[in-house]
Length: 276
Image (cartoon, rainbow, N blue to C red):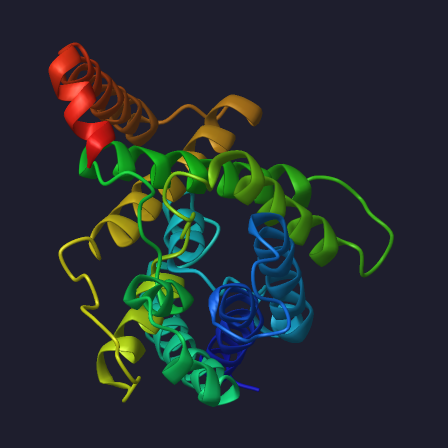
């Protein structure tokens, strides 16, 4: 199997199981309807584990542009292969989303909520606040890359690593994912969002392209910083890019905190937000 096909297939598997569990939980008259966030996070964890099992021997199973770029940023992956991997990941995510759509064909018509239909394909914020939503995606993907690297530095029983990675994904979802739905993967969000835009889904609404940049940019920033942080702090390989990214990330964090606290300091505004 070529590296391109491997990343495509691995990401397709990720979306079939990940998008599939969301569809089962939110679409009407599904037997899994209403089973909730814990099932979704466990489903995504198993989806990642299965994608890694499927193609890990061929490419290491990045199945995520943030992982690919993060590894390249610390010299663990050649930059020349980055575009090929990302293209494969996005195409695989589109195909996976189409398969989820076909699997749940009768359920789209009986589901009235446009937001739930979009939620099967793409992430969205619990509270729409772009600056803070960006920070959440950065933190989640920082945890992902850092976790992947310290998991990789340990010896496990042969074949166990993908399950540990799946547990990491579930943990990120349970602990950090409630704010944005935790894309932590640009292809996971962009590919299915494209599928949502082009598929003839009954009663679908907007694909929310105004938000779509956040689950792309946030994971890339967080992923690169997570990889640089591990390389610098864990391996004592402090580099100029690490210090630049540290300053950049701190500025973003401070800016988001000031913006949110300033907004929340007005009691009348708080009341208006609650009423909305």
